[in-house]
Image (tube, rainbow, N blue to C red; front, top):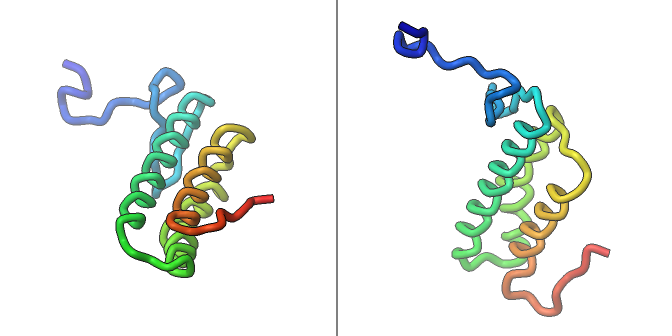
Length: 111
């Protein structure tokens, strides 16, 4: 019998597709594990933003929600983990832009 059959958790190493998560932060050994964690993190942020878009919040209310509820957790995780330059930051910027410019005219610019 294997250890898994006795109720022990399976081992995580470089061959496992997902990183071990400890206190909300990933313990990754490969770039693929980090990418999987970051993609999951982005989809969670997108889900939370979509939930808050259904509420009739003012611009100031959306900014408060973004800073205090959504991005504060992200900054904590990224402070410990880090994220490579490239698509992660572009996707994050797009998610933030969609929430902040919902029903606003003229659209704000990041530049």
